[in-house]
Amino acid sequence: MRFVRTALPTFALLFATATTLAAQNGTIRGQVTDSTTQQALQGTLVRIDALQRETQTGNDGSYTFDVPAGTHIVRVTRIGYGPQQKSVTVTAGGIADASFR
Image 1 (cartoon, rainbow, N blue to C red):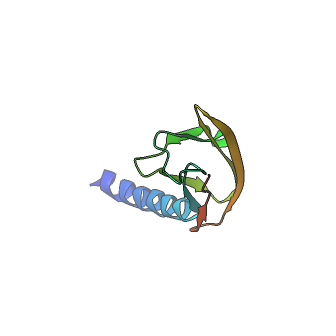
Image 2 (image 1 turned 60 degrees about the horizontal axis):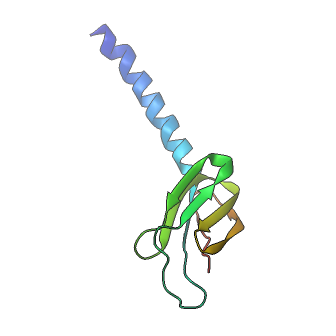
């Protein structure tokens, strides 16, 4: 019983802190397409170096990152195409677009 009395407030505090931190995040999403054919480029590598995060685009050329609010540099690379990068500013709870052609 003593454990429950001490553990319950601790878990409640951790949950409240985690909820507050999650609210400070935002989303970067976009699509990578070929500029000539307008076709989606599946399997393109998308990176945010400062966060050490990367993903690949899906079948429709799209990708999504959940990131802390702030300015991030998004880089895309694919064999046969020149690398590109964009600076993207994300607000807390907001969605920023970083699409590439």
